[in-house]
Structure formats: structure tokens, C-alpha cells
Image (cartoon, rainbow, N blue to C red):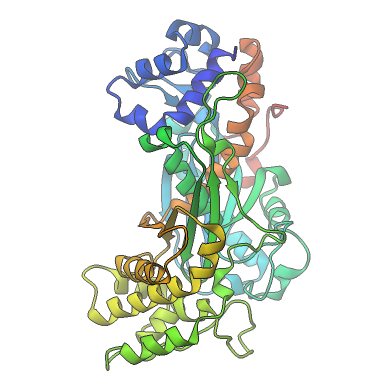
Length: 471
């Protein structure tokens, strides 16, 4: 029989969305996991099971009739680096995104020297922490319990998380150090507290999290295969496989998010769909049917080649944000792009986005036959109804043997930050609940304290691991 605290924590992961919907979420949760509330209070009093005695705040029961993970379960500091934009946020164990913010845009960030971009990331992190230290909802024992830092990038990483290929504009990025090592050196943290992940993969984990928190997930009987496309300055995809909630030997149902598997490939380059060649007959058809006032589809740039080299006719060269804005005769800045896609859209913009979706759909037919996903989720600034509709139309024309996947749109600009933070929480907390929470109360209290760094000031040189991490 699992410790009551472990069973409740597993229940929070499995019944997340329902807890928000249930009028008395706490009582329904304890009934569902078969734990009397009195047993939970007794075993987890130092972990926040009693509102009057918050302790390490692994659990939060302060709101009457409710229970959720508290900040003591860990906070991940996530930073997303786009071509121009820099986004930051804190992610808690409920998947909630806190203090999400856009930093001032700077063009062509990947062309910067590594030390310059890392300094920009560091300052953004310090600024975020400075703000969060005034948020009592995020404090445990008077400090921010940070698990570490995870950076989301739009560019390729190899099996060792080293920057790969000419997409990383400045050659010093490819000097041999992994991005995790660079982050650790810049932040003055242990390497195991620094993560790096591709944006499409992070978004796919965010999609998997939202799926496994939905009420529909509890009725899932087979694996769910989801493809997620990131449509931004680069074009990439990720595929995630989610098991149904399982009943292991202990008899407990466990969320499939714990075992959700990203297909990364032998060299961690799976999903680099932007470098597939486009079907020239589809390109010719789209150009033939275009309105007279819309320029033809022409290759803009592909991140797999140096800027001085000829641009290959790859998908990314036609469907990236730079390709779309250039075709429409505006600056490729994030500000101009946001103006273009704002509703209601101009007819020229709507048609350019529709062409983008058609090219995507035609190019994805082969990968879709190989993977056979149940859904395709579009993320990024170019995830629009026009793109979705045209993509669906081209896929329907192909007549896939497994049928047409459901095409969805996530307009949340912080989906990748959420997924990245949850990747860290999954590895450091969710998959280790038994090791963290089982055993005598005081021992579990010390293990919870060892999850995160106790941050009481924003300056990086004050971030320290003050308690031993749980084994």
C-alpha cells in the first residue's frame, strides 16, 4: 500500500482538470484515491496538509475544500529564446504558468556571441525572480523553491544538447560545449539544474499535459499519438505518445504523462520537417491560383544552410515567419508579424496563410503515413484558422490509410514554456514521488526541502542548493 501522501500526489496528477471543476475538489479526490483525509493530514502535516501549518508547502490546502500542489513541490524557471523574442515564466507542479512576460525584442538573437545571449537570458531570469519574490503564493519557508532553469530554443540540438548546424548563427555556439554546460557556467549552477529543449518538443509535452489533465483522458483505452507543429521563424515538429492511465501492480491508476514518450530519433533530429523538399507541382498550382496582387511563393531562407549559400527549396524556406512577412512586403519583426495575423485579417494575409497550410499539408503526407497520429496541433505565431483549414484540406485529398487526424490550434504563446517547465518537474519530482514522500514524516519533509534551491534574492550568485537532493 502506497503512502497516503504519494497516493494523493498521484491523484493530483491524474484528476487535475476535474479538481478545478468539482465543487468540493478535495473530498472527491480523497474518495477517488481511497485515502481518508485524516490519514493524509497525519502523514503530510509538515508538507502542507494543514493550512494552519504550511511547512514545506508541497501541498496547498489553504483554499477551503480544495487541494493542489504547493510551491514546495518545485518551481521551474523557463526561458524561451526566439529569433527576436525572449519569454520567461515560472511553472509550478500544477502546470500553472506564473509571471509570464515578454522581454524587449532584439533582432537575430542566435547571431549573438554566446556570452552576450546568455547574459541576456541571465538578466531576464533575475528580473523574473525579483518580481516573484513578492508573490506569497510562490514562497515556501520564505524563499522561492527553484528546481532549476530550462531554456527553450528554436534551433537544433544534438544528442548531448549541443547546438547543431548553421541555424545557430554565431560559430562560437558550435565550439563543443553543450547548451546545458553553457547555462550552468553562466548561472553558476550544477549542470543537473540546467535543461535545454527544442520548442516543438516542449510544446508537445505541454499538449500531452493538457490532454492527460482532461476529463476525456480517463476514458482513453489505447495509446494517443499526437503530432505538434511549431510554426515560427523555423519550422519543426514533435511527436509524443501518451499511454492511458495505467493500473500497475500496486493497483493505483497513474497518469500517462509520467511515461509520455517523445520521438526524438537516433540523432535527436526527428521532427525537422522544415528541411523536407516541397512538392514543386503543389507550389506551381498555388502560384497559378494566387490573386494578382499577391507575390508568388518563393524560397526565403532555410536554417540548414549558411546565409551566403543558395537557399534550397525546403518547406521552411516557404512557410517560416520570415517567408510569410517577406512575401507580404513587411519587416520580418515579431511586431509586424503580430499586426499581420491580428483579426480581422487582410485578404492578402489570409491567402498567404492558406498557402502556407496547403504546403504544410502536402509535405506532411509522408510523415503522417509513417507516424499515424490521432491529432495535429499547431503552435506558434502562424497557428491560424487559415493554416489549419488548408492543411486539413490537403491531408483529406491524400486519403491517408489511417484516416484524417484531428487538426487543432493552441494560441497560447506560453505553451512551450509550460511544457519545458513540466519536463523538469516530471524528471525531478513527478517520477520520484515514492522516493520523496514515502517514509517517516520528518524524513520526507527534508527530502522536499532538498528538491529546490532556496532563493531569497534575485542575484544569481545567491542561488544555492541549501539541502541535499532526494536520492
